[in-house]
Length: 370
Image (cartoon, rainbow, N blue to C red; front, side, top):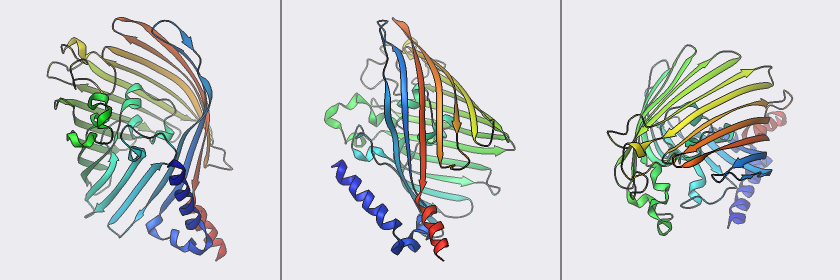
C-alpha cells in the first residue's frame, strides 16, 4: 500500500515538472511546491533505570516531506504538508499529514481557517518546523500537535500583531487511554482543544503566547499556558519559552518547562547554537492516584518525572547551495523519576537536510526557455 502511494506521488511530480505543464505550476495555485528531506547519523549512550547502558547508533532517514500551497482565489488559499515516507500513525495514515487546510482572508484584518493545522500554542521550539528542530525537549517529543479544527484570527493594520481563536481536536485523542480497539476512531470521543493565541512583534522582540484547554479522556481538562519570547538581531537571536500546565485547581506550579536556545551567525554560512531545558511533572503531589486513574494523566511528560537537557551544535549552509544544510550537535539529558534511580544519556548527531523547490526550479527553467 505504501509503495502504491509513493508511486502516485512520483507520477504527479513527473507530470507537474514536465515541460508541457511548466506554465501550470507557475500559476499562483502552485506558489509553493517542494520536497524536503533529512537524514541523520546518531550515536547514543543511554542508561536505563537498572544502571545498564546501551549504545544505539547508525544512519537513518528522519524526514521526507511534500509541501504544496498556493492561492485558489485572491482571498482563498490552501496549504498541504505530508510526510511522504513515515510509519503509520496511532490512528491511520492521515496522522502523517501535518497540514491540510483552506484559508479565507475576509478582509485586511480577518482570517478564517478550516482543516488540519497545528494547535495554536505559544513557544518558539514548538513554532519551528519539525525538520529544523535538531534536538528537542520531552514535551515536544510527546506533543501530538497536528489536529483537525477551525480558527479565526484578527491581524492588526501594521501586521505586527495577531490574535487567534481556535477549536480543534485535543492532543489526548492520540493516547493509549482508548485502547487498541479504538485505533482510527479516537475522534469519535469528542475531545476538544480550545486555544487563544497571540503573536506580536515590537522592534527586536517577538512574542508567541497562548492559553489553552486540552480535554482529557475523563472529560476534565489540562490547563496549558505557553509564553514564548525571542530577541532577534542581525547576527544572533535568543528565545525563552515558559510553559506551565495543570490538571486541577490545586495542581498549579507542579508541571512546567523552561526552554532556551541561542543562535550566533558566525559567518554567512555557519550558525552556532546552544540549547538547554528543564521540565518536570509533580502532579502526583497534588492529585491522589494521578496517572493511575483512567483518563487522568499527563500526555506530555510522565508522572513524577523531571528532565534536564542541554547541548551545543552547528548548522552549515554552503554558499554555493543554500538548499543544503549540514548539521551536528552534542547533547546530554539527566532524568529523574520518583521511586527510581536517576539516569543519564548522551546524544551525538550529524546530518544533512535538503530542500528541492520544484516550483522555483520549473519557474527558472521556464524563464530561460523564454
